[in-house]
Length: 223
Image (cartoon, rainbow, N blue to C red; front, side, top):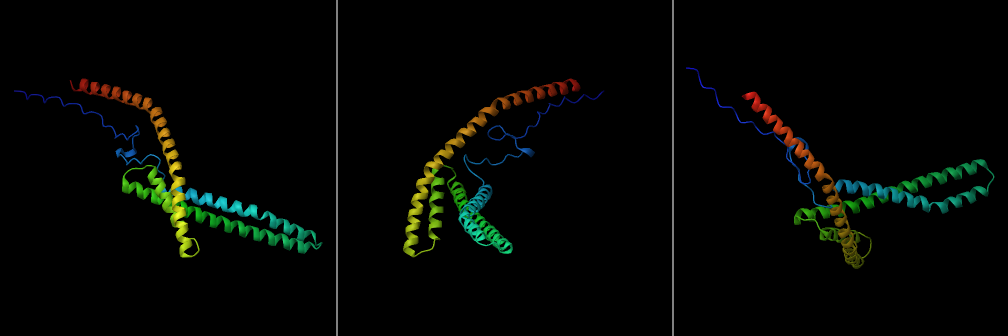
């Protein structure tokens, strides 16, 4: 008696990688933790702050050295010795290079420290509170301004005054700026999501059609 044929196996649905919030599929099939709206990477923000401080400090010292260059030109005009003129020009260029380099380094360190402190405190508040809103930005600005007011030279009373004034000014400035930043970030995310939704729907439809065609082909081959 011939053995009965085994029942046809049910077709397995095609495996699809997990889809992140907003319609993006992560490479490798593992979803990542989505960041809050309006958050900025600490390393990126610090690097941008350092480069901005370098440019600001260097340009400030370069513009301040214009008057000193005029003094050098007057000294060069008062002498007819070529060697003396060359020496004056060389000394002026060396001093100008040193001033611009020092200003760039100091500006980069100062603005980089300020940016790193601000975004570090902001990310810490986001992790502890579990939400990102204007109060995180205002708190980070207040704490950063108070910390930099504390390290300024002066008497203890002067430093205490700097801490109070800095915390008030930091909160007062960062509160409206943080509200504007969050609103702009939310608007940008909505526009990105609305632009991606038609493409995502079309991709899912094409994927479902391909899956249905594969299932029909597998069913016809097993008959």
